[in-house]
Length: 181
Image 1 (spheres, rainbow, N blue to C red):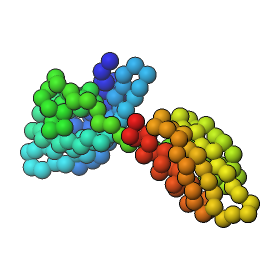
Image 2 (image 1 turned 45 degrees about the horizontal axis):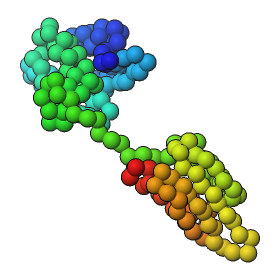
Image 3 (image 1 turned 90 degrees about the vertical axis):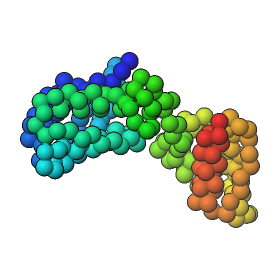
């Protein structure tokens, strides 16, 4: 499955190129059950049109001849090539040889963050969406809080003085363990 501009985005691209005067726009691409957006910035300089394309973490510039009727087609092909990993850029290599997508570091989702914040205050055990489990013991006679964190890499003990400190230690430990996996 490859990405392609939506029909509305294709029509809009042709219209905005006809009136390009240093404006910004966002175009949408789709493939089965998934949509992404490409942000475009148009800069007119004499008879040249520079279009900066931002798609996810990828940023690319295309220089076009102003008023060329083929500009919309060139831009559409470049945007779709970037989205599909086949663009001729320093990031992807030659056209037709996509590089594997860059792996983004793991970060806790909002639900896991909320569960972890609640857990370090009251104690108990939670199984998080990310696959990690954590058990927190809050001793009444001590200022220390203890936790056992289980990730795919194993089980580790953690200790901290305040709920905030334990939250930070546990979140960093879980994220580091899952990034290493």
